[in-house]
Image (cartoon, rainbow, N blue to C red; front, side, top):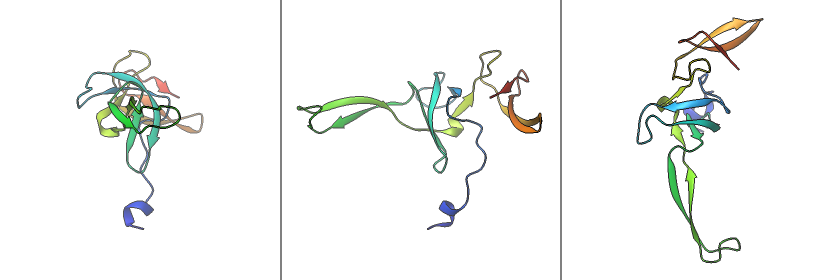
Length: 113
């Protein structure tokens, strides 16, 4: 194993189920819900963002083969969490609330979770 695989990934500002906005790339400006986060690769799959065409071979489901549209992973640096209060992209901070560390939107101060 390489050193990169052994080290644990740092804390992420995005979790599964969050609403995010794409801030860079072909889909810039689009919003969607996070379906899956790949911690080691620092990527996330966002609903309706970064759609690619997947060519499938003929099988029982598709006797003639098919071209499926599906979401591809987006690097987390290109995503920004949407503030639940103002519905705009916001940076994330962490603070202790009731003895637990919670994320909050820096724009409005609203606790996220």
